[in-house]
Length: 205
Image 1: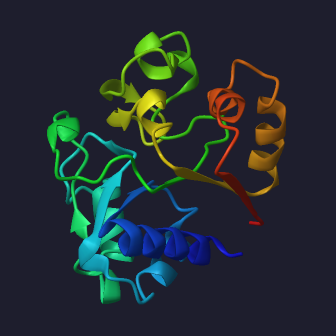
Image 2: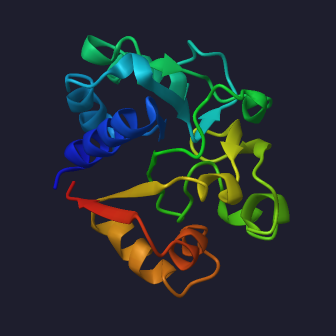
């Protein structure tokens, strides 16, 4: 089943059974083709809540903003009426956003990071310890581009009913395989702790 079909099915099922659905998306280049295709799917988009798993801590119209990426590639066409909530420090107080999240789409960097949870944060309990409560974290500048970030922590990401991880290219596929045992790679903690409704999609370059 294609990722677009998987996402569509999960959203439609939640809308049918619960009246609404929620979707959490990532930035980066890997999912752009998926977003373009998804924006043309027939779904009751006005009943779908949308947010980002992380973003660069910049203005929404900044060239490196994940919010801008979503507006360019997804929040348009048939999906233009989706209920978008930018990720913010007070996001968890927004009780009208449907929780738990129905489906979260993640990418991964060549250093094994996902969302904005990077290798130098592994010993940060707020970021990676599942005994911590779900939180939104603001980070110092890091990654490429080297910018401050806002991100869900692992505890909050794990609240998703379904998680899809995109792995694009052989280099990232090798990192993913290494991460099954390597505790220095952030993605290790997602692989290790997620044993159901976890879909890994490998995409060739």
